Length: 288
Length: 216
Image (cartoon, rainbow over all chains, first blue to last red; front, side):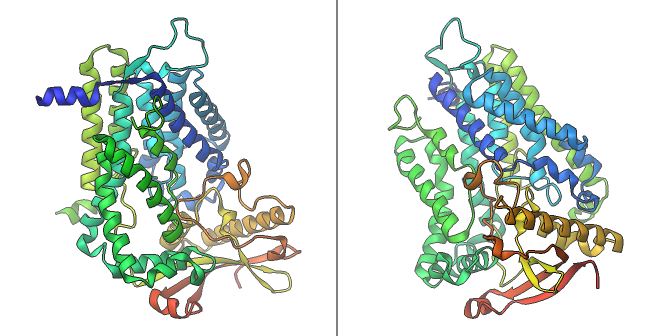
């Protein structure tokens, strides 16, 4: 098969309207969950001016920051409405577009006093994903309002879902890549994993001595396994894009991976529900 | 050469503008793909999005929402530092303060900012920050005693609210954890420890005063 045909087969194979609608609900629902869990995010503007002093005018311009608190609160309310509408398919294309743009504006609030890069706080994939969905006519799939006169077509362009899946896979691949580029093969060693287990629990746990991380840190072979197996998992995860077998194996492993990170390292992954982007909702026992 | 370049004052603003242009390009190509029925327009969007996300990932230089996804990627240090807030009541008794008073800001974000910036603040700036922390601690104390969530994150969803990326300890769990009378002062203290020493003895943590309000 030529490269052009491979490209077309990967990106332009159709998907069902139900899969696109599920992706829309997952992305918007995830963002809505986090937005409702940061209900006073614009309130950061009421922190002392010293806290904001390091945010340059160019950085403010990059994220369209600088409006008064009242305006930001109104926009944050609009974000809630847009995400709610996108989740339930009410004017979904417009809702996805507005939701994506408003997430681009509000997501940096979580870290901007330190960094303009609010990744792993839960908004990155929904920001890109909702915008990507708004870029396709298929986004109106399974909309509740307004009612479609022509009914829902059975298949729609598959590229939006594919692109979102690729971006999601990059979370794992580049997490592994960053470890090797920054620390090399010293990263998955017993000593390094043990220090992370101890240090993160010392810094974050109420009673580090009785934490699971402390218990595991005393087992060198488990530390080595966590280091090497975690790294291997991160590099192998993109196989879910190409192989049904890989999806059946790696998606449950991803759940285990994140549960382990939460229990042992006290690191929470707010996009856990987005693993469902790989489920084929026409055959829920399978994977898209 | 890279060192010289990174020291230039115009570099960071320029990069922020470039990153905005990168995002704008993504949106513009997306709108073009929607308006055009041609597959070529979609392919342009795909190539652009893949190209930008791969360059960002491989170079590890962010252009959020295209990002590098690096997490605990450095070698873990042998020594760590952290911080805590204590409230002092009118009788001079000291009470640990729950970092949830800072919500919606995550404690690690406030801590990173505080370590980098507070030592450079003038006295009045430090006093303003200290007064802010005292007001926040007092508001949190009142909420806890009223049976309401300490921070703002759980106001709508309660225990179903999404936790922060780094799960934080809960210092306050009941009204008994705070004084009946208002806090009169707050103190931020820096904690420093050696990981292995602290594993052997959890009390092996050095504490030093960092910021106190009112001073004295």
